[in-house]
Length: 216
Picture 1 (cartoon, helix red, strand yellow):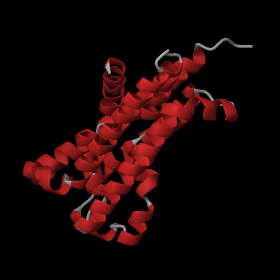
Picture 2 (cartoon, rainbow, N blue to C red; picture 1 turned 60 degrees about the horizontal axis):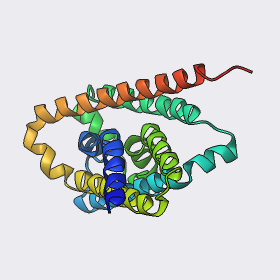
Picture 3 (cartoon, one colour; picture 1 turned 30 degrees about the vertical axis):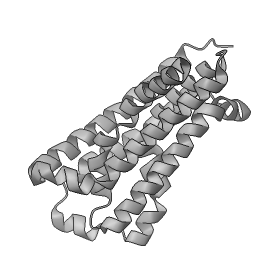
Picture 4 (cartoon, one colour; picture 1 turned 45 degrees about the vertical axis):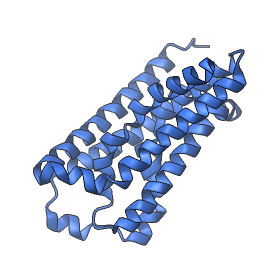
């Protein structure tokens, strides 16, 4: 039982701060502006399920997938970090748009639903940072003598993170308006800036990891 609890806490502590569903909730709310509550609920469920699939795959088979394509975690970090930088910058600038322009740029609900995986799930919710950490945690568990128990605990941890994604996104439209229009705008800008910084940090981590590799 101790191995299950340890693996559960390791996954939650390792992944939850990077996924940061509460911090991403205002961005989800902005990207779904004008959508009905039913569509937001559907999107929240799809993002949570997609995020769960990505985290489970990264945790248990991520190292094998990278090896098959001859990729490294560093290359995933750099590529995904650049995507996050672009997304963060776009969202940060979007805060300067007028309400009239925002109305004109609203995405139809049927089109919005097709974007549940990209970009809402990958890379905005479960991005390269989450994937690289999950792969690292999975590699660590693979070398353990209690593989079955740690796998159960890790799987429960991933389910807990996915549940936090669903709850944060599902009820974002009810919780965030408490901040008021000005407070929500500040929260959105801060979240977008943190996303931008996170992308830069991930790119730097990937570059540093590549630079430290022996040159042959």
